[in-house]
Image (cartoon, rainbow, N blue to C red; front, side):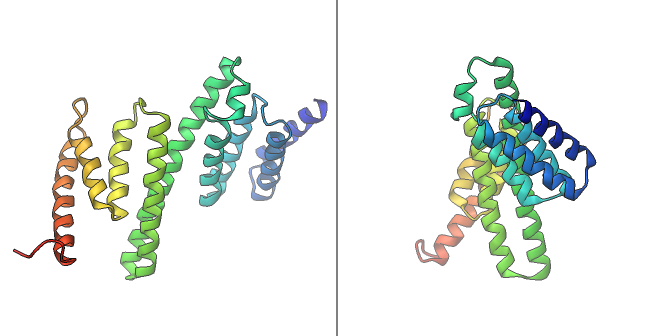
Amino acid sequence: PYEREILQQYADVLFEYRDEAHFNQAVLCYNRLIAQQPNDPKNPEYQAKIVAIYDELMDFRGKTKARDDMARLFGKKTDWYKKNQENAAALEKANMLVEVALYQRAVFLHMNAQELKFDAKSADDPEKLAESVVEYRKAAAAYLAYLTRFPKSAKSYEIRFNRAEAVYYSDDLPLAGKLYAEVRDDPKNDEYREDAAFSVITCAEKVISNEVAEGILPEK
């Protein structure tokens, strides 16, 4: 226990230097703390430090994976969660950290897809455009992961619309139309109703156009 306390203090000192070399060493220390005692109630806090480090380093892959690890290691169905059932404070903090991590991960993936799409169109680069479609699919899956874990979140309406957007730009038009319709028909929220309604029509028109081009439907 004493050795572990020293390791934690050392990691925190490294973290406070706030430069790349010390940050990388701090990540190693925090990961070691988590690996040594996987069910330690403080582990989500150590993982949060890893998230913060990759944010400061502006490491897209690192910060995305760190958030994925937060949910994978400390979500409701994990061994850590089961082992800490009697620790209400630890569970409450973990739930908050996991929710934030899943939300931010989806947003980062969505923003990355948007940037790739913009760059691809600016450079007339079909390969990069195809890469953006893959990233949009990842973003859509990340939004779904959030909604599955936190269906009653105050952010759920916004996230359902964002998921529809990501699905639309991943070229799954039938599913996008369905998701937009769900947002349009939401009885309690209307912020995205007009945009969603317009997008339902756009999806339907594009589906018909594609089916005509593929010979599934006859031309008028």
